[in-house]
Image 1 (cartoon, helix red, strand yellow):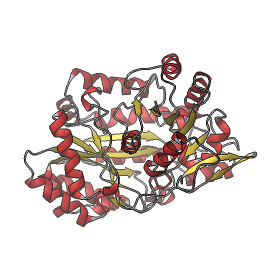
Image 2: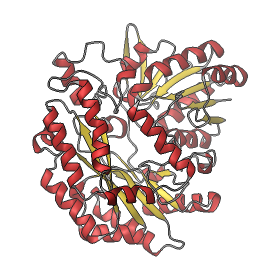
Image 3: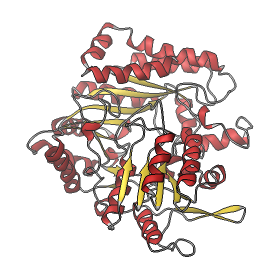
Image 4: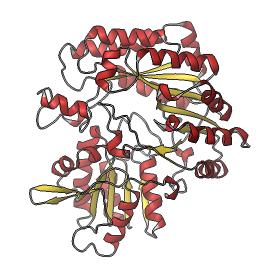
Length: 465
């Protein structure tokens, strides 16, 4: 085997959906004529023992592992087992955490040979061909967006972000059957399953202080051509009978022209599809005409990145939006369409007090949204707020333990925000929100299957555990 791509071992994953990042890598490598296997260890509930045995049997030349910050220790353990099972393998790690802390990842994971940063379709493909040809010397200049050891430190080559997303191959849906996944989707609530993810654009220019999107996908928003998107929809429909999609973009509506072009094409397409935007669109990018076009195209739900009920906190977050704009946008969506709205909220952001947290919860309950997603502030390594907290001495120089990085429990002690009280407020936020008859009824009507109920119960256990 030339290339083995893996998600992290995770016995209690918060979300189990097809991994688009690995699927794009798989398509690129496969398109270069190399043999590639993609294993979703979360979905198949595969453990370290299975991994070691599989690598020992298949002897892949390259093993690539995707890593989020909370998975660092597990990925480290995976790399050590892989090194023992296949000493000659080139072990690489990529994804959000390595993109934001490449040198730290190499230091933390001695069994890992290289780290990939940002979007890696082209660079990882060039790297894989280099390994196939013997891997003499350092990786060639065609391999950008990579970090490698040099002496006691690391050399980091900046990532190059693809300008024309239409040139990238389709995600490897020929290797990943969305029907094999549990009744789960980004955003939880969809009109039917399966509802696989699709990405229509990449990049974010906003640079919110708590987010690392610009490191993973760049600061410039780039868009797939509408024809390219329609081809992927047709493939999933024809091969798997998919009619329900989750468009996992943060910023697709930032280009009104691009959005209207796609929505108008979907509105006249037969057969019709249904879709959501579950990742948190920016309120100020939406207007009545665009929302109506979106609904006509098949959109029945969207999420808004609201985050706080305080203008002061929004400024510290660098959200570039106001509480007034949020209220106006939610009212607009409810007035002009039947699209269901989810709001994202961060509780316990640095500089807040418990009263600020209570006010955000109150704000959420007052808004006419259908669902909230309350997150306890999570300091993601490499973000602006993380570095500021480290400068203030609130995060130790060596950083936080990966297991501390979660959005359902406080990751660190912040002034004015006792952890025990914050946990209680996080749990109370959901109870207070849903303690209204119309919201309880709405919640019950959105349960689509026994498997869907199990997914929600799993998340509730994690929240209350």
